[in-house]
Length: 195
Image (tube, rainbow, N blue to C red):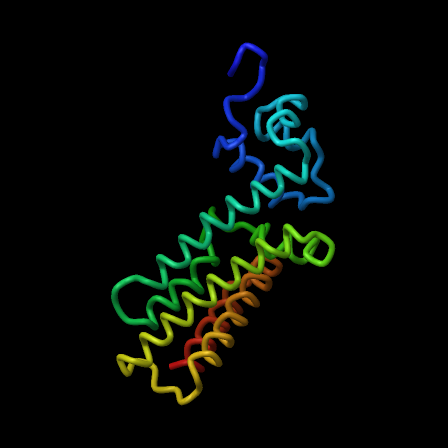
């Protein structure tokens, strides 16, 4: 910390990661400055000096969540081995087991539902995430078609769109229900339709 009491740098990932957790838990509208200060360890003045506003911190949190999440999802889809295993791994990525189970859901999906219609920043980040993920899914499905693993006659575009829809549906349904049997049926049905 500097002599003036300001935090080192507002880009400190630990602060932004802490804000991600607060926004995942509370959403944007019900998240208070006190919640953010408590979780990030910054005082109110430091928080505003570093970020300017709650919305600016929210933007940093969304971007961080997007960057970490899209990288992880693309890595899953680009793994060596059968495409079916890659697609299953991606579907299962959001179905945590045991103590890791978390009903808060995806920050980006929650943000899109809460604010995308009225907040161009949220809309832009969510759209960017979906576009990048759809491209990665398209490439994985195309790879499966080229190797003969996927013999479905539907186009790559149709299969990628269907998978993306099932994936996002699962990411909304599971946190709301925590129903593992339903999640497994969705996963198996999605893969059976493609393969």
